[in-house]
Image 1 (cartoon, one colour):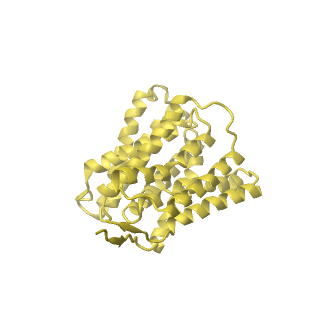
Image 2 (spheres, one colour):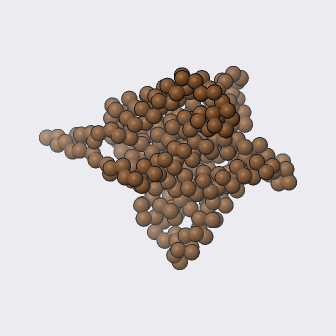
Image 3 (tube, helix red, strand yellow):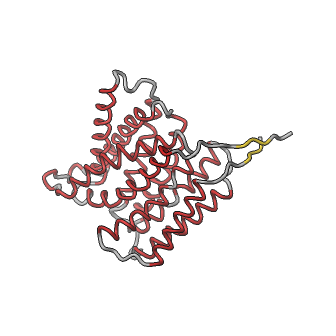
Length: 308
């Protein structure tokens, strides 16, 4: 006889909501910071320096708090997750933006929650997503598509290699997100993040060599704008936001955490209006409302019964 159990998740505490705000807002601003950084710093070199410096600073902070900051950390798991998340997921997106319109890049990235849902269903929890989660994701994606089509030009031709890199980045980040939930614990999440960023930096270091970036990199040509953008990415994009993301993964379903990929374009729209004086039309506001409504359906769905 089949019994029915109820899947319950922790309530959305102030800490959880604060961490969501961190990845929603900060990672929404990093698109602008990345564009400014890679103006004078090659993509993979930028990622190598960003994540290695962040890992070094975080290790120093952890070492000051305890003598063995990496005790209990799944080192191999952290390095693998780092290669998938900070290496492939971040590095390939930044590299692809050299030859693919940002609007198309944004459309590809919004597939993240859907891919996580499907991978989790197929290889990890084996639990089908709820109808409300699917509906919320569909509504949010529709809103993002409308935003991108309305505010950005998709003219031009994306180079196939860069488009493949974008798709690979989304799949890599999605796999890393689900593996992270198994490899890290709430007690070791800060130390795990430190090793994870090191793994991502090492992966991007290898890619920078393969891509021949060091032969054409001239540190004296780094602009002040790129330098400030790089510093922002180290402290806010990596140390703060990545810790929020990995901490959330130890407490909240991965499908909910990855809704940041749907909200980030809304943040980018607001940032464009405030910083670049872009005009926000009623259609854009409606599109942003769709995104937020869709994310709300995913985040605040009711506990669902599951047959066992």
